[in-house]
Every structure is written in structure tokens, then in C-alpha cells.
Amino acid sequence: MRAAFLQMSSGDDPVANLAMTQAMVAQAAAGGADLILTPEVTNCLSGSRARQEAVLHHQADDPTLAALRQQAKDTGKWLLIGSLALKTHDADGRFANRSFLIGPDGAIAAQYDKIHMFDVDVSATETYRESAGYRPGTRAVLGRMPQVTLGMTICYDIRFPHLHRALAKAGADILTVPAAFSPVTGKAHWEVLLRARAIETGCFVLAPAQCGSHPTSTDKTRQTYGHSMAINPWGEVLVDAGTEPCVTFIDLDLSEVAQARGRIAALRHDREFDGPA
Image (cartoon, rainbow, N blue to C red; front, side, top):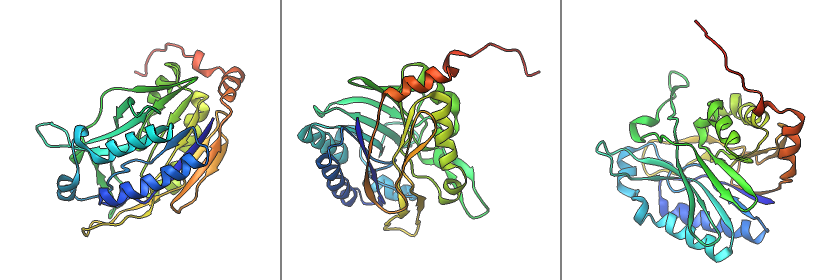
């Protein structure tokens, strides 16, 4: 199976981001990709709640989702929209960070809301409170394609191995980890976390990422790490896309999933235990 990452530098203008995304999807489709993957918050990367409130939509009328569903149908490709920032009807007004698997017929085959919120203090000057603007999901999700199953996660989820193990034990062959990783934590942890999840589960890990400095109409700028990666089930890095926007192709031999799990069958070796006290 041939996959293609879109490594992007989305800003806070969904219209401009959509034009960029569609051009890159077209390039990936022309390059023969069977599965095309975009990063987290493909439609709008913004640190301003007011800006998000002004430009975001509900799922039913989101123009990015509608356009990308049509493009998947027009190209006959599977499309993993890493995530879209979407309005919800929640009383507290928080948004959803939602990933979509779109089939070659343009239908939504699966959707997943990010479970783990990035509420961290990276340093005295770099803090994040994702839960202030986004409400967490509550359900793990598999996306099923012909002959392959995806375990859908988003960014900060990568730090929670039990989620990925549950997805693998439920049938996932590939774990998708679209991201907008901080440069500080990206440099320290991104590759090792992706490789660990692949080794623990015997899955391919496909992680399309946001990169660089993101265009903004406010004074709240954002930098992200880039380095979209593909990891094989033995934990080897197959692709590192670097730090610039690009389309990157990778050919996957799905038989490697069974091979890795046959060599080390850790998914079958869980044992109950007591404690700790």
C-alpha cells in the first residue's frame, strides 16, 4: 500500500488552508497514494479562542470537510483528515478536535475525537491548556479499509500507550498519529514515542505533522516541530519528512505486521497482577 503524508503549515484562515490542502492532496493522488494523510487541525491552527469562534463551523456545514470529501470521491482515494477544529453544541462552547477517515466514495468511514488534552507547562514561557478550548473525546475508534484497519489517535494521545495497545488488540494494523507537536517536546520525545508505540503494538505508525511558523491574523503565534514520520512494526523509521511543508510518499508492506507480531507476540502475553499497594 502506498501512503502519502501532507506536512503542512496551516494558519488561522481556513479558506487559505483548504486551498493549500487540496493542492497537496492532488499531488499525493497523482503520485499514486492509496491513503493520503493530513496533520492535526488541518483547517485552522490558532491560539486565539476569539479567532476560532469567528472562523470555525459545525461538522454539518464545515466547508473544509465538504470539499475534502468531494476530493476523495473525485480522486478515488482514501483520505485521513488528521483532524479538523469544529464547533460543537456543548453548553460550554468548547470545540472538537476530530479526525476523519474518508472513503473513495466520499463518505465518512470513521471519525474520532481526540481523547487526551494537551494541558502542560513546557517551560515558564510555554504553556498549553487545550481543554480550555476543546472538549475531550471518550471513545477509541478503528477505521476500516479493505484489507487494513487503522487505529485513529491524535497528537498528545501518543503519550498514552494503553490507548494504542487497545487499538492494536482490537485489530489495528496501522496507528495514525496526526500532530501539531511543540518544537521543544518534539525534539525531545516525538521520534522515541512513535517508535515505542510501533514496537509495543507491532503496528505501522503513520504520523503526519504540522511544521514551522504558522500564519496568523492575531498576535498569538505558534511554532510546530514537523518531522512527519512513518515507523514500521519493528520500530524502524521509514520516513522523516524534515521541517518544511511537503508531500512525502511511503510504500508499506503490510505483511510486516504479522511478521513482527510473530517474532514478539507481546499483544498475547498480558497477565493479571496485584498491586501496587
